[in-house]
Length: 355
Image 1 (cartoon, rainbow, N blue to C red):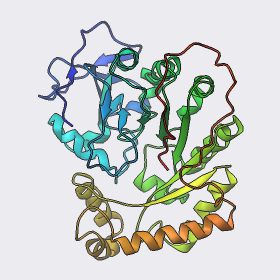
Image 2: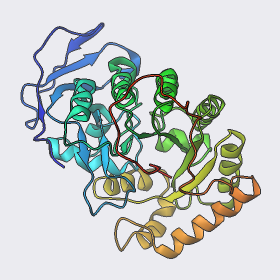
Image 3: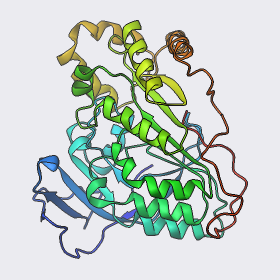
């Protein structure tokens, strides 16, 4: 998907502590408002504020993901995960898939109003919507732009089922809204924790909350009544696929109160492949031959490797009591017999799960 659906907002003044950014606008974003912020958390970053023309996007039929519709209020991500499969989407903006993806973030400032408008359209049938499937909707920028509350409010008001996958602990800020939404529709929450090794985390996911903080968020969401799954992803060959790493990670996930754990081996699409290879050559040159062998046929590791990895995680999950929650479990926080508000009638929707 390219970026024909974006247009630029008028400059209506700067947010607090904001100043116009000096870099020229990407050719694909003429007239966008570029900003930098004078805070340590945003050092070296530029945000391109745009007014999108549409926000609920259909997933291509050839995709391997188990959902049809997504909402992505941001493009680019300060998490700076060296393996992020979404990196190549930045090249559609005349930006690169490496440092630009980490430091130049597109913000759809009208996301909330667009979601409400599109949910109200007669052609919309209440299909489940997935968030956090391209870049993280709870990345650091969300703390400043606060796009997710209005998105969740719209989904709540239309009783539209949705899921969120995140590495961001900022999801806890929206817990009251998530609980309100869960009273009228299906809400699926998942966090991504591929490993608990802190040295590895600092090396490959430097902009994310630590794995321990993410697991604390799993516990908080679970205590609030949500069945929270953990996507154990990506599992990095030679780094996160050892017996010791799998055992430690699954044990920590179980201790956090997760209802399920689903492993996913690293895959390396164009853009991510080159950036990850650059990092691997610098950080772990001894592993380069193994990766060349594993990924010589394309983006995905061999099926035999994936099956063996899944079996090992499944065995660890059984040891720690996580085998009870299988994919497709129909579980959610209790719902009242009569919703507390009168939503637009949703179509009958099946369980949406990223796990």
